[in-house]
Picture (cartoon, helix red, strand yellow):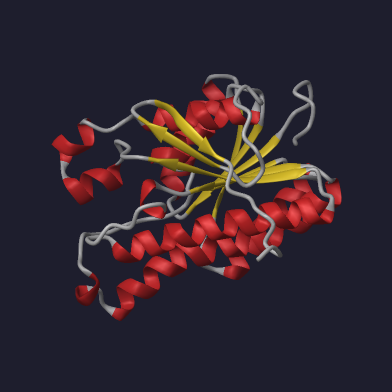
Length: 256
């Protein structure tokens, strides 16, 4: 799936400046991987990298607007140019900015949701998949949500975004299998996580009741280290601080 554990992995994490992305970066850095994080806020990225380096980890960052095809392409090309490969891609960047029924969602809100949560993932997949096929290895982890499995009436566009991520995951997994590439694409589907986004959506008291983002980071780290065996195309459900179940959802799309 990825390089031998004795070799240095190159792991790219989008939205790596805070929340789940930050925790994933910190946990993967503990494995000896070279971490490359990106987001829009340079101060957040710089702080994460400094924290990782203080713990003797390896981390670089780039300021990237993930909604920009040009930014994403330049970023991926720069990583390949510098490190020669991408072993792990974590598509984590995303947002939700409020609770609304579908009739209250504005055109601008709708477009912003899809640009940030779906288009960005497409741009990264399109650019990184050929690299993983060329190196015949790699792992793509798409950060989905329980909202990608069970739609929320008060967050309908966010739910639609995460359903799209599930579709991307299955499609890419099947593409890897059919091309004979020794790479995987999976999704992780956490239930509530105590992040800034959760606080903004549901309040501080609710957020305190949710699982820590560090739990998600540790699960991702264990997947990369193959401590948790996840089939290509599968969903990893993370609830109450642990892996609740793993759904192997691939099927032969040609069958009737």
